[in-house]
Length: 313
Image (tube, rainbow, N blue to C red; front, side, top):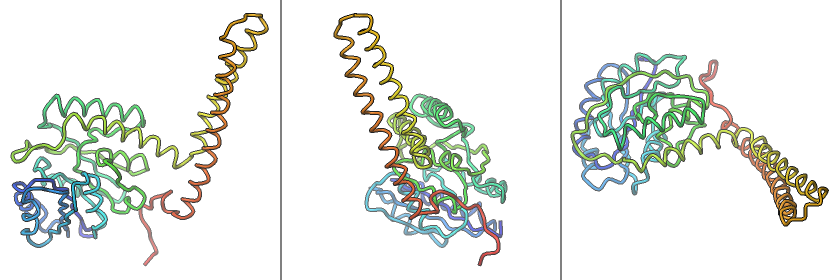
């Protein structure tokens, strides 16, 4: 890995007891392996986490955020400050094992964009963590027709160039690996060690499940609307228009058969409403298509990600 450099991004929220232990473990595992830096991002800690980060030695950098913005924002802050061609993200609670970093680096190759870890033996609570995680992973596979074994595993290694067109927003750290995969990244998955938490408290519970489902739905919608917004709206417009025509035919049939009932009037009104909705959806599709093309013309790199270049200085 002498041709590469590595930036390790570690979001921190109230992990003062774990920071010095993790820093020592990383230094021990990566000595003479690769040129690296560790970027600790203090995401609004209220304990002495920042003091611990300040006291760390060489190869360690710190970013202190004004408040708790969430893990995705903290990771993105670290990534945008990174100076390496490879990025590795991991949790700061000691549950990710630094010994797996070397394994990921050994597996990484020029044909691979992402090495995603999956926790083979999770040391988490069954009700609040394991069961929701299982169903969430199945939901993601069903919606996106793509699968990663463990979407919730933060331990992943990827090319920094992927970030140019794949920004982390909201709380999308949970599906960041899947986000890269759906945008064409070549990936490999490996089992990683998952250690029990010995210090501090977990920041996540059942409440994260609905956020995950929302993120998956958003990812599906964004992939469609960014790439082909007109197709998305046109599809709904056609379905709405067909429903409108169906109601209108039913209304005429009732009149022809001389069935005098308020229902035929309801069908006519419903048909008119659906027809207006179809026109509105088509208009939204056209406007979205125009806005999308304007955006891509101003930000041409947003529609592709370059894996590598040759012949350039």
